[in-house]
Image (cartoon, rainbow, N blue to C red):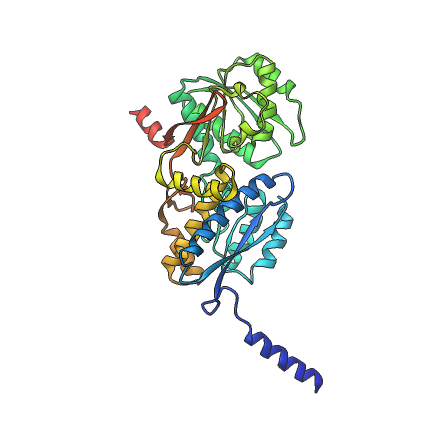
Length: 382
């Protein structure tokens, strides 16, 4: 009898509890996954800050569907298994997910989110397969092949380079994806990749690879990796007498914070999601708000976090509901102006937008132009 009473009381208690994120809840709870500690925490924290800034602003303006938004963050430490565990803890308590940050954990989580039809958007995971698991998976960033293609087009069509070397991290999907797409596009456009050198995840001495590159005499070197690694490669390359142009992708953002001598980067280029010296009103408003809140200049991960939040919450508002399929349908119809450009989606749920082409000059990063590689290639073919 006591057991029956206890079960009845437990059932009554459960019925009395609000369903998290439901139409009857006082808040809309959104899950957040990011590496907030560990080797790639700098990217996770930057992304989280961009998301949190947008949430703070939208809550101050009345929230979404008349309700306040609550972010529920989990630190996955840059590990795919940790990310999966965090997702399993979140899945019953949130209506959508912002995350993950790097590609491997994001893909692992996306495979589960697809089965649950959980609306999910990664701000920054650039690997092609991130959005492949399901039609409910989106991203705010352009992807690795797009960046690799962009830099190949820019090198050949804008800089007039004909012979390229590539040095990349064979243990990292981000780096290998960029390297492969750059090589393929550069050769398609008539260029020659004279050296294609790999290194391991723990390598800090690149003299062997750089010696091989020097012997091939390229006029440009593509270095697709994150800025802490690129800083070491660039320094050692200059010390080895390699004075040609270096090229990179969005992982270079933050490079000036770790190089001892910024002059080694003068005349080098990388593509990014936005530039702080872009006069666009969306960029400058974001820059002012972020700097005021965090007392630091936002990197691209922060801008993408902000845009990912804007995409998701605009979709929820347009859906008029926290129903998962309604949110997914509204996300697919996204047509907004963000910090990182005007955002619409293709059939793979990847955003279609220009890239910011950035160079280094006198210890500063400067926006060269907003660049569309597809238009540039079409123009060159005419």
